[in-house]
Image (tube, rainbow, N blue to C red):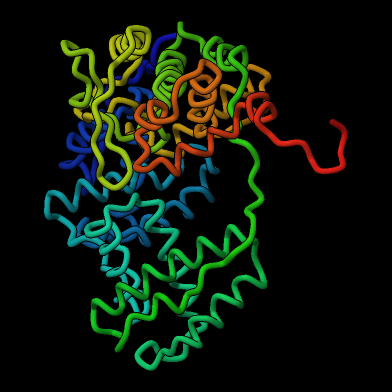
Length: 401
């Protein structure tokens, strides 16, 4: 099925917004909107222009709040159809780019605590090289700590210990351990910035206890194949989803690493792919032929025409990078289509590792493929081969021989 079209090829906008209709049309096309949607959005701009004349609103006075007032009045007359703020926000952006409107008033400055947390987040990203999701998680735990902190400048080690105890009383062992990791990073940051007189990070004592973790879980090879077969490769989105799943299953990339892939990261002549991983680490991996073919099929007959360099994009306007969450959604939708128990993208990474263990690949080689920083991350897969572990296990005293 082709892209939706409309018999209406031109919408005439009259009134104060008439000089800007061509710029709005061009921006909508650049964002990947269909001709039919462009027509509908320009009609809405025309209605807005007439409303501005009737209410004596100048172009320079347009704001998001005034757009909401217009939409409320428009819905009262025409109902909710074709009355959305999204297209009008784009109009507002065009006017701001042209210098016609001054732009939205900046939000009120954050309080001292939020300013400190913003600096902490910047430190985690710039100095520690953490992923954005990890930095956000650390900031959330630091915010929770500050909420129960009377005065950071007079903080004592006893107060830090009590904060950890409060956390341990309300959440699991694993969550408490993560809280401690974030709190230690925050306290070290505060010491470096001179906000506290001593490094109190050691007062966030390690929490002992067994995490409620099981063996690393992959999925069966047949289920992985069903995920791939569930993609309708006659459709653009099916070719994209097939390529994403092929990258996850065959290369063991994380969802965020797939989302960050750009066209410049693929070396077609060398048969390599550059992966931007955790901690700003960059690795080169061989690009299997079948994965390369899947990506080529998507690039040639599925990827929207756009100047963006990210490989995997949304199929609907506005055309934007798919993002880490979008990659995970692709996996979950494939599970539903294939009739496989719903999993996250990371389970496909576990699947690759478990397959290598079953094939007798040594742990250092598995760690190299998965790009682990240390053997401790790879060592969890030593427990996957349960039959081999049974062979070396000593008999329980007094039990059956």
